[in-house]
Amino acid sequence: MQKYLDVHHIEELVRRNSYDLDPDTLHQSRCICGNYENKVDLPALSIPGGDLGEIAIALSSAYSFGFELSIKGFQDNLKDVIGHKDILRSINDSGHDPYLCPYLRAVIKYPSQYGFDIEAAEQFNEFIRDSGISKDRLINEPFKRKNEEALIILQGSKGIFPRYIFETDYGRWESSVLIYHKTLVNARHKALSKKLIENKSVKLYKDLNEEYLYEVISEMTDIHLFETLQHIDSVLPIYDITILDDDNPEIKKLQ
Ligand SMILES: [Zn+2]
Image (cartoon, rainbow, N blue to C red; front, side, top):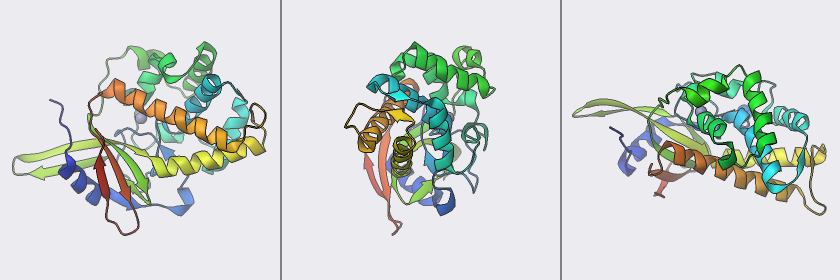
């Protein structure tokens, strides 16, 4: 049976599972899903599909908002912002299994719902192939997901580990949460938009600038996040959580 986390569960999980950000790896990412182990070096920045998802978001932004994008240029700028060259690390490391990832499964299966035309979807499929991930398995295998029991939209200066064991009078149960780190994603998208314009990796209509690029990439990121939620469970609880330096989380239930 599907369990959902109520606000008391979330308070406990956030209190026990939050951790300080590492200033040296602020732009490194992981996926939103609860597929990861709680490792000390787990990047706090969580975005649908990790760095591979970042490429999907860029391709669908270019198609949906009608601008030219050099995909090679995009990758170079992304690697530059991340600070290392392995854009697959975020989905192949730390226990993340691509076949258990609700985002990768849905984006490959329903590309038009994620803002892709056929050409953009084919370009993304090439990345999937080059990553050694089987598109056929993503589409056809029965989907056993990790049973994430809430979505946390996180803002502020902490990270949160995705897995947590609740101990109650009735026994122990392991839960996991989807986490979207809005503050870190926005910071990365600002840095990335600036670089894409400086290095002429995108061609926008005249007078449109990096602020516009940042806005459309942010809008497409929201589409990728909430579309994925529809494929997971459209009534999954959503919590907006802000943790500032005083360690006192502010929790709002959005759904
Ligand atoms: Zn994932």
